[in-house]
Image (cartoon, rainbow, N blue to C red; front, side, top):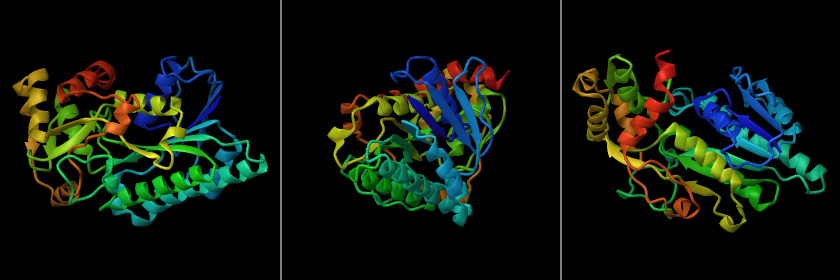
Length: 328
């Protein structure tokens, strides 16, 4: 089986690669892995079946090049983050939406040329940003998409494209709506949600962190470890029982920022918590106000998707998986 990871240089792409290479992914007979991104992806020394590709997914010629690989399984993780998509409107639509449509069209051409025998599976990382206020305290699987950011609108449109191309039989796709992934290793990025990781990661590394919103803000989280598991579990599923409903809300942990901080205090002590400095940012406050807070993802759970059960567990996963490399 040939596997293409789009966004392979990013944090989730790298976690996914390592999970596939571990042999614990549940994916059978992976012969080749292609890692594509705008920058060169890191590949472990032992990965002798990996090919690194560099290019811009917004370029239709690049989409054609990826489709020409005729991958059996595509993990579509490539996008610019929410804050950047809001600040750079045209760039967001070109990368997050037009790039996906160009890829689907290129795959459709291969499907037609094969007489219908080529039908790759696509797992797309969507987002809870497809939802917007007003919403219930706990969003069920029946709640409708009302995005209130450009990023959320872009993700919603790609979900619809994937559903339609699946309905027509060109591809076999599933969109998984990820919670905010926390605690992300590395440096802060332009995502409006970046501070959710920053207020944990920076203090654990002895660095001050700015909290730009009220500690009463409630949000939906899962760890990077869970994100990689969601992706490989999705890839292992028979998607035909889902019919035309090709989007799933992933499980996660709902907690307030205050509860995040309490969990950090429990794990690392009050001196670490003192490194968090409240400093309201009106732009971030406005964006976060339109985000969902809690979910009842019953369809995903019925299909075997699992996540952490509390935020302290999420912090401990960061300590196990990423803090040693962060401080190395």
